[in-house]
Amino acid sequence: MKLRTTLFLSFFIAIGVIFGVFIRWVSEDFQPRSRAAVEDSLVDAAELIAGVLSQSAQNNVLSSELIAEALQHARSRELNAQIYDLHKTKVGLRVYVTDENGKTVYNSEGAAGEDYSEWRDVRRALTGEYGARTTRDIEGDPSTTVLYVAAPILVDGAIIGAVTLGKPALQSNTMVDRARRRLVTGALLTILMAALLLMLITYRVTLPLARLRDYAKSVRDGDTVARPPVASGEIGEVTMAFEEMREALEGRKYVEQYVQTLTHELKSPIASVAAAAELLEEHPEPEQAARFVKNIRAESARMQSLVEKLLQLAALERHSAPDAREKIDLGRLVREVARAAMPGAEQRNRKLSISVEGELIIHGDERLLALAISNLIENALEFSPPESQVDVQVLRDGDGASVIVRDRGPGIPDFAIDRVFERFYSLPRPESGRKSSGLGLSMVKEIAARHGATVHLHNESPGLRAVLRFPLA
Image (tube, rainbow, N blue to C red; front, side):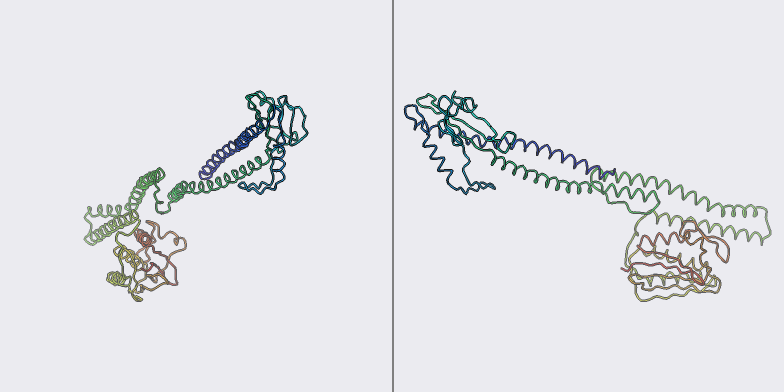
């Protein structure tokens, strides 16, 4: 399971459990709290009516006519009381009055003369204690629960009877159920909002890790990618530590690879120089000696060129952006580079044609761009047959500008078309049969990438067309 899913599910389950326990605790507390409020009101009302009955008693004989008339009048009235979201339309109060023996003198719900002495509310009230009970009108039906509270009727300090007030719990239960539903609805909405917040937090936490994972895979596959943005906190520290590790490992691999390649590439010219030197020690004829010296000079120049280009390519690959960005007139730059290459073209018996379309401004490092264009022109001259022409064009290409270098040589074989931009990969020159350092096109590709440009090679009949395309400034 992914870290993002694990974090989300863990937080969501934890919040769900916490809210579930909270809702259950509050819901269980609703019922007794609601009944306590009703009971408190009944106690006050029972004491008030007990006081009225004690005042109306004559010779310690209870009279219930006043209570009966008041209750009948109240029940006959139509109420229109809006208590929050509860609409009350009638009086639901029950009353019964018992004498000192527990027999009913008045009962709003039944006949007088019944013996209630064993009922808890009456029994305790007649002994001067607090009397209350809860009874269901229909056994097993909680909606028919009625709460009764009794108060003693005192005359000159003596208990001559008790009055009990009853209140059906249906209305309070309805209010409790509504409050419980609201609580559950509010809790569900809160959990939903918490889930959305958790998704955002989880995304914020795992996004840097996902970027770091993708970065690691790209590094593993050898792709050139930028380091992901550094987050704050521990994830940022992990990112920086990973980057430092990558740089250390790449640095070692980079050095090993270049040393191995340089050693391999230098073997041939070193062997050639050593062989020519040994032959010179044998004092050959002046003509042969001159040929050996020429060979030593050529191989030395080859080694020097290899080392210089290798250092240039290494410097390019170790940096991700041009050293100095400036506005450059691409046509002017190509003219300067092509004119500098003309003497070498004439020595090889080749012609160099230049064509520039207007003023095309790009951004970049002029030194590096000149190096890339020079390598394309040099490559075209080396593969061109004698007395042929190399065309160099600069033209607008949609929203960009392209440098096109075309020769009339043999082109690139199919087996090499995907490898010509690799370091140290080189094809034999048609005229001499010798290979170059194999670093020229690699440098062109690196310089193009650093400038947001692209470079492509296309076989034509005859020759090869190299297209270096830049975005316009």
